[in-house]
Image (cartoon, rainbow, N blue to C red; front, side):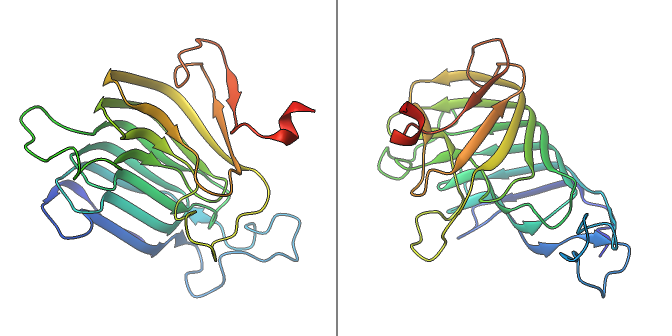
Length: 222
């Protein structure tokens, strides 16, 4: 279905999420399946239209600032996600269209100045949790104030669940990423360790050249 307009909203201090999207794709034929795997291009029979969420502030939520569960062809533009306990942005499935789900022009803060939460309350906070599918991109996203046992990134959303098996590599792309006040670890590789990150301009890894990032493993050392 079409979104309509979402702009200039705020959410804070919720027991779970600032914004939660369950299943959402704007399709040409909304009452028809979003893909047909008998076709060479499974999305060609039911093309999608882009959905844009814009200018959203989400802070001090007990779980995620944003949880996007089953989505596709979606843009989150100018999001400000601060002091959320589990993560700033959590993207679960992004394969309902051939087009990417994009977080752009946004800021994710682990702990703001003056935040009186204890280290124990924020000890497992992640900035961005990437999906368990292909089709996600972070573009011009700034991360700030992560310390202790927090991490800026976490792979494979809900990968800790034994029944959420992930096969094959899952690609997420990054461009124009920046940091400030980071003394924590950068990455937490969840369970199945299937993630592949494309650092398109070297800004995510601070290499300043395009690189690919995967978790270490015996299969890479041979």
